[in-house]
Image (tube, rainbow, N blue to C red; front, side):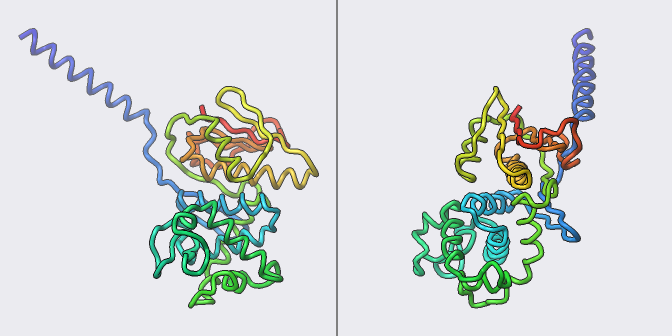
Length: 274
């Protein structure tokens, strides 16, 4: 009889503990990223955010105008829905469905987004006057698609994403994610270097700081480009918090987007993995 009471008591305690955990645990969120610029709301998934933010970072690294970023994003929307796919028409693969038979590189090379994005920009830079021509026309000059007007339907989304990811629309790109625990700051800094190149930074434990120098307007744009890139890759890199200027973002409260914070810190992007 005493044993039975112990079993009953154990079940009651276990039920209370489970109920407490479930009560305190936040429900899983639908994960997505979004750029809201003007009247355009461009909502994308986490993989799309990863590659779109990389397109923005590489174009900034190369000193290309935001227009180049818009063209790249619109092209990838049409060709692969901004997913790094390993299949396509004939020998087409990757973000831009580049073909080995047309000299874009080996399958292994063009399956690497860093390579394929770079090759796209190489080709775009050879298009005279691309900065002022319609996005769909510039994309077609690079891609030589059988459907030359197909890129046009992605122009609004591409412009909104490029404006935010290049830092010209501050705090207008955010991601709603489910926290995945702590990452490592060395992984974050290595990822930023691979995307943006050598951006000076300091680390302190699980935190990194990227102090930016130059004209105030340039610092603001570069700062938000980096901050938005970090948000777009926060789930993958297990980033817990980001701040720039008078705004901050946290994985725990990512459904709130960028929220006001005390202090300005107008020239330093800060990121934490704990």
